[in-house]
Every structure is written in C-alpha cells, then in structure tokens.
Amino acid sequence: MSNSSILVVGGGFSGITTALEAAEVGHEVFIVEKNPYLGGRVAQLNQYFPKLCPPSCGLEIQFQRIKNNPRVHFFTMAEVVSVSGSAGNYTAKVKIRPRYIDEKCTCCGECAKAASTSIVDDFNFGLAKRKAAYQPLLFAFPMRYVFEADKCSEQERKDVEAACPYGAVNLEDKERTFDLNVGSVVMATGWKPYDVANLENLGGGNFANVVTNMQMERLAAPSGPTKGKIVRPSDKKAPKRIAFVQCAGSRDENHLNYCSYICCMASLKHAAYIQERDPEAQIYIYYIDLRTPGRYDNFMRKITASDQVHLVKGKVAEITEDPGTRNPIVTVENAVTGIKGKTEFDMVVLATGMQPSIAGQGLPVHVPTDGDGFIIGDEAAGIIAAGCAKMPLDVMKSAQSGTGAALKAITSVAGR
Image (cartoon, rainbow, N blue to C red):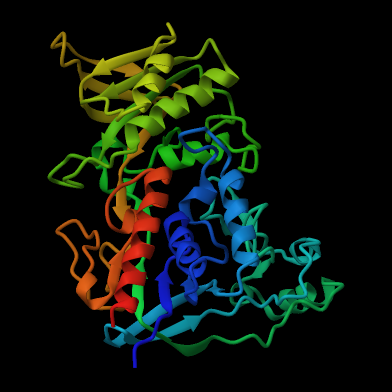
C-alpha cells in the first residue's frame, strides 16, 4: 500500500519550506535535523538577501507555520541512519541523541550558570566558547536549552540538575531509535563551508586575523561573540584595512571545481557591514570575476561606488603573517597591470566556497550524487534533492528549490 507521508532530511530553510508546502496541502511530514534547532545555515547569518533581513525575520514566520500545522512533525539532534524499501513504501530508521533537557525548560539560563565546562562554540565557528549547558541561539526552535552532560564530571551534572527550578534537566535521557514509514524522501542536507585547513597557501586557518566569510557573519551579528562589533580576533581592535579574497578554494581543480554562486555577493554584503560601522575603513576585494546575478548587480554598483572600496582583479597567491603585529600580508598579481606585490592588512576575509554537507560521508539512502558530492536525486524512486544539497544557492533560491521539491514529492506519492 502506498504511503502519502514525506520524510525531509534536514531542517534548514529549504527543508522547512519543503515540509510546510507539503503539509499545507494535506501530507504528513517528518523533518529530521541533526542540530538542536531548526534553521540551518540561515540561522548563523547576520543578514541575508535580497532584503538584508536578519535571519529571525524569515525563520520566525516559518516556525509559526510549523507550530500551527499538526501535520508537521520534527526531530532535532536526530539523524537518519538508514532508509530501506521502495518508492511509496520506505522505512527510515532515525536515531536521536540525548538532549538531557526536556519540554519543561523555560530558557531561564540557570543551568548554564551552574555549568563550568567550556566548549568551543561551533555555532560561532570557533570564535568563542560556550558552556556545556547552553541555548543554541536567541530565537532557537525549539526554544529549549541543551546540556552536553557526557562532557562533564559527575559533580557538574548534579550541579546543573539541581540548578534548574523547573526540573527540566533529565540526566537519565538516553539515545533512542525508531522507524518512520514514508512514501517519499527529500534530501535537504544543506552545505558546509570549505575547510580552510586545506588552503595552506592562504594560511590554512593558522593566522588569527584571517577569517572566513561565515566567521565574518558571526562577527557582524548582534547575537555573535562580539555583539556585532567587527574586530580582529587577535587583539579585538577594529580593522582599518580589510582584504577580501574571492574564490578561496572555489574554481580550483585542487579544491572545489565549481563556482559557489554566493561568495561574491557575500563579500559585497560584508563590505557593507564594515562601511556601516566605519565609513573610513579601506576595503580591498581581490577577485577573478565578480559574479552578481540579476538584480544583485545594482547592489554591487552601490557598494563599489565608494572611494573606500577597491576592486583588484587578480588571484591571491599567498597569505603570510607579520609575527609582530599579526597583520596578514597578501601576495597577489594584478591581472590588469601585471604587477605582483605584497600588501599588509589588519584583517583578511576568505570567501570560502559552499560544499555539500554530505561530502565525504556516506548517505543513509541510495541516491546518485555528482562528482562534487551534490545530490542528484532519483525522482522515479521518490527521492528528491532540495536546496544546497543539490547545488550552491542563496536563501531565496533555496526556498524556491524547497517548494519545487515538495511538488515532486507530492507527485511521487500521489502517483503510486
């Protein structure tokens, strides 16, 4: 018998869009998300195109739609271990990690005050540390703390449990698995920043004042580690000379062969962040080609009209560091003048590319991928790719992709 329910693997913007579009025409939908919250990479942004809205703007609307629709079920801190069966009749085995804090949580923060273990904060891309008990982000959905009890001593676990005035800390929480029976599977597993450790000529992540484009997003975010102040990680001083290095690992046969689509626009957006905070800061953008599709071309013209923004056509060959000042030194050949030189900056931002999150990992379901790890999907089998799991996309196009994936999944289960 055919099953009309749909599994969405990944709770980022495209996955949420897929789930809501399908649920609002009558299908039961299950979202499985590995993080403790829904929202994916969008939740980590300071602002996103086209309106330069904060992420809460779009996500909170989606979260309300989820709350109001009983057909949408979601599981966080969860992953799909395996998928068996065939189109119209799949069985997905789902594993949920213990959160150690249950639905009684009011986000009062007493558990975090009682916790003493500090952990590198992945949400802020290593720019800060957090407690073992923490709120993932200010507008987290579900709005509940997480306690990484397995990283704490027995005494700390007891202290955190005792600190909660609502009895929400459950130290008996265990990993659990269960099966979901669905008719179609949408893979919305998203993307990850390309690992700068691979970019040895650009410092390999070893220079404090060479940051990635996603780290810049967190520096600029009011909820970020510096409360929205863009400062050098080494000494917390505001940089006066900043360089942006485009195609850091992209369009390179040794790294990512493809253009990651959003990097040029992201760097121009970051230039706008800097200009808002310090109109006198000098900004240099080193690029191969500036790709600003469609209406984004107007944004590029607006930003680059400033006398403080300098476009330099040329690929950066190397970044070194002055050991005294910790200033990055950029070596580049200007493709227009043919002059090769070195320029010192206060901070450098690497426009690292988008890599599919599942790159280098096994998939729980048999589905074809391309040579770069993006999911092609198998629509005949009812397995659909959505968002940046399929190709590099911005937020708007990820939402459009999610809508398209919902239609394909609905068509798949309706046709069985």
